[in-house]
Amino acid sequence: MTIQWNDYNVRQAQDELIDEHNQPRTVAKRLIHHLASFSDEELDTARTAAELAIKLMGITFTVYHESGGAIDRAWPFDIIPRIMSNTEWQMIEAGLKQRVHALNLFISDIYSKQQIIKDRVFPAELLANSENFRPQCMDITPPLNCWSPICGSDLVRDQQGTMYVLEDNLRVPSGVSYMLENRSVMKRVFPDFFEDYTILPVDDYPSQLFATLAALSPRPTDNPTVVVLTPGIYNSAYFEHAYLAQQMGCELVEGRDLIVENDNVYMLTIEGPEQVDVIYRRIDDLFLDPKVFNPDSLLGVPGLMQAWAKGNVALANAPGAGVADDKVVYAFVPKMIKYYLNEEMLLPNVPTYLCFDPKERDFVLNNLDKLVVKPANASGGYGMLIGPIASKKQRKQFAEFIKENPRNYIAQPTLALSTVPTLINHHIEPRHVDMRPFILSGHTTQVTMGGLTRVAMVPGSLVVNSSQGGGSKDTWIVDEEACLTC
Image (tube, rainbow, N blue to C red; front, side, top):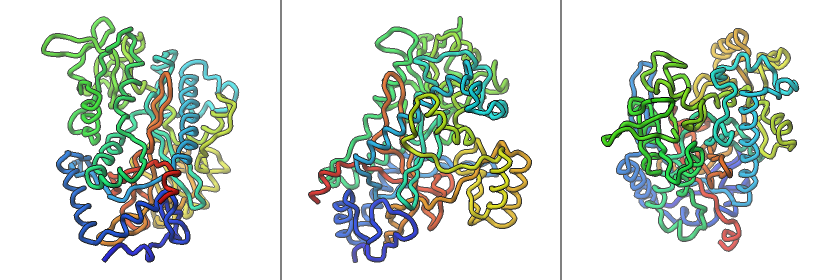
């Protein structure tokens, strides 16, 4: 018995691999032809091989429970990749570069002249109530004037095929290690696919990341000391911290491994203190320096902010960059692009209703059954309301939340996110997906060839986060000219 594509239903949303006539899209023809020839036993063997590779490679993530417990789980992975043409990707890449450029200019402006506020393009009251604005960062200029050298922006495609930016992650964006490991697993399980397809590589990301970080070094040296600062083994993203440090050839350190003397940062080694030039920090702002932020923090380094402010060490991403992570700020990115770059936005935002605006708030409250409501600064799919599937009690509760703190909520239409064929037992079924590409900014700007495709494994679900039962897929950016000969 082989996969029955005739039963595959793509009417609910646009599918990335199969068109509305149940025919493979041009970029997917060769893959679909391969998969259609597999028996159930062969598919099971491939899936088992992928699961075994994930276990052997130690690819895990941590799920936290409300009770306070935590469980390490093997990374959830589906063996059917998502495929996009390089022509489409080049358009997306240009839009992401434009967006990150404007966001970095916005952050720089906010911590200096605040001209965008003076010119009444961005409301002053939004900054006054911003959870991630750090007044301690005022008038500081990071290296290259780049506040967020590493950004992960989430993309979704709607039923009409339009690609939207859903949100930007400019503080400590995570997930890139899983993008890289997904590719490694696919190469192990389906080596023939990589002979038949021209799949653009992603495995150069660690070297690109190191070059981006090294360019921030305040000392003129060919070999700057770069470290990855982790909260420790109990952090949900610890696998990624260790993985990236190993891939870049950098030391993985915790706060207790670093000291500040004379406003310089040193790493404690068996051979004595070694000056640190760049810290790729995976710790939230408020835990970075107990002298400046949370005095009870045991994760950070006392004096670190002073060393950074004096230009003796670079921090990536810079403290305070999260001011642009805010989902309310997100709604102003089209205006930022016009204001700072005098350009029209290449990648659109999802239409967004701002609950601090009385008229838009009234609209949201009257249409909670049709909208998705999100807190301004939550992540991981937590704390949001998906109106069409929420109960009356939940909608009533969210109405009260919005009324009590309208600045903290935005609402968006419920998009029918695109789907990708996904192996469920012995059947191929559509599952909704998003994608997180990663953008590196420094002397130049680089975008990963694809990104981390996250998939909602529950039928009909729009929640793709691994912490809430989502899975992932490898993302292939392919040369469509080669596919025309399929």
